[in-house]
Image 1 (cartoon, rainbow, N blue to C red):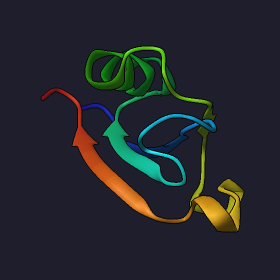
Image 2: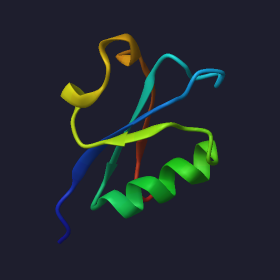
Image 3: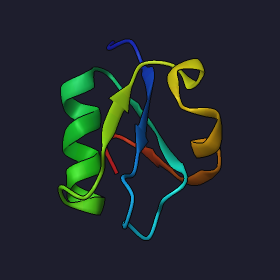
Image 4: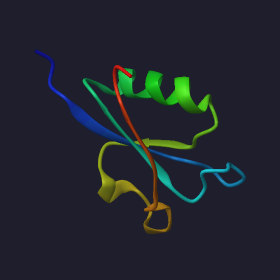
Length: 69
């Protein structure tokens, strides 16, 4: 059984999701990134390992995704 981790993705200026973040639950960072790309393409700015790393102005939850969908 794979360990499940949580990752946080933020959007850049000009993206409809800015300011905000997406929380993804996945077994590893690569699978979380694949899930983000599947739903949002390449239009995101940063991948972070904890909510504490998300800038306070971006702490508005836009979406929650779980791998595999």
